[in-house]
Amino acid sequence: MTILTRPEGSEPADFNLSRRGLAGLAVGSVFTGYAVAALAQDAQPVVTDEVGLTTGMTTYPAPDGFDLPAYVARPEGEGPFPVVIVVSEIFGLHAYIMDVARRLAKAGYAAVAPAFFVRAEDPAPLADMQRIRAIVEQAGYEQVMGDIGATLGWVSRQLWADGEKVGITGFCWGGKVVWQAAARFPSIDAGVAWYGRLAPSSSATPEQIAAGAPWPVDLADDLTGVVIGNYGSADQGIPNETVASMQAALQSAGATESGIKLYDGAPHGFHADYRPSYRPAEAADGWDRLIALFDAKLKT
Image (cartoon, rainbow, N blue to C red; front, side, top):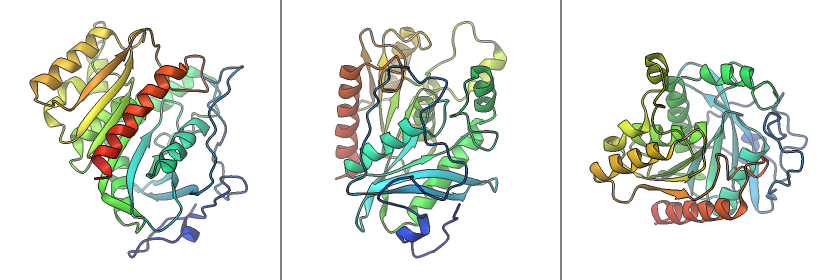
């Protein structure tokens, strides 16, 4: 993969980007299908075309020296375009996350989706959930924040990116990262968290609590941008009481623009159109909320 180092910004050739997508793109072993462990047999996922877009893979150095791969989708043209970082579920960078990036690009954003897990192994083509969880556990808080910091630094050097207008969105594992990153980086103006864990479970051990820290419920005072959440009331992994606790924390912090919408009867993963949990109506409403927030905070 190419490392982009031009101080004056980059040209499309630097990315090896293509308007025709990843077909034929020389990016080594990048997995471009849907996450094997979660793909529904009867799935009919949304597929966003690349007309009017520039898309492809790149790499840039993370603080630990790792060449971090990322998928980039942005409108054609010089820009500069507001930026949205896309954070994956535990399944990593795969077709669904790439499509989310293209949806954002169609809406006028430069979307960057880093591959946070590939230092250990790419979880996307794996079917063994135990192995996937072991990979994800190796991506600790400081590594992930370092990767996001590297992403922010990289986009700030691209002529097509408006580094002063930055948002972040993420799903499941990535939903929790949205809250963490918005509290860590003042340059993030807006975030949309999709069903990311907010607090440790009541049965969590001290070791599990420490491993998951910092928890979003403890970060409300540190948010400098606006963060909204799209959550499901029937999510078996995120109890409604933790949503209520997060709402209370935001209110206590005076974060009046931030907050969570709890979709009645929606399960975990209701936006993931390749999974059995997909709920089209709730997914569409949540996406409308995302676009409304990003347009208000990143395009003005």
